[in-house]
Amino acid sequence: MLKLVVFIFTHSSFICATPVLSIQSGKFLPSTLLRKLGSYSRKNRLYQTFRELGRVVRTVFLLEYISDRGLRREITACTNVVEGYNHFLDWIFFGKEGVITENNPEEQEKRLKYLDLVANAVIFIMLLTFLWSSSNSRQRGSSLIVRCWRLSALI
Image (cartoon, rainbow, N blue to C red):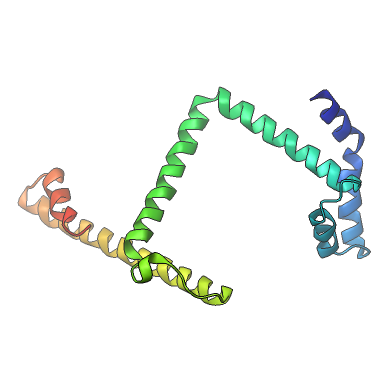
């Protein structure tokens, strides 16, 4: 670990200054930087420096994740929300068993955007239905549990 830290501090000016100044001056295109980093050349100092920096950042995050129970809870909660949305999308997505058969990336992206649009419309309609049911039920005096039970048929 000490070797990594020494390596990063030794090359820290190179990490920060060289790519930024070269791109700003117009001598170095961002696409060139990405191509160099994407070549995985073990001899490229910039690649080595960013690789080691990435390892340090990943290690620090893992140590923080292990030691902080609140962070683990927050990450799990966020992951569960995303997984719930993905299951909802699977439920909405029908036809061809949820498989996009197009090989064209633009068509694939279009279908995914349409799916998100339909999902958002369903969520919006459910929210309006819940609010309408809630306001009408409150006037009649029914409880929240009864109102949710009535809505469960729609879900």
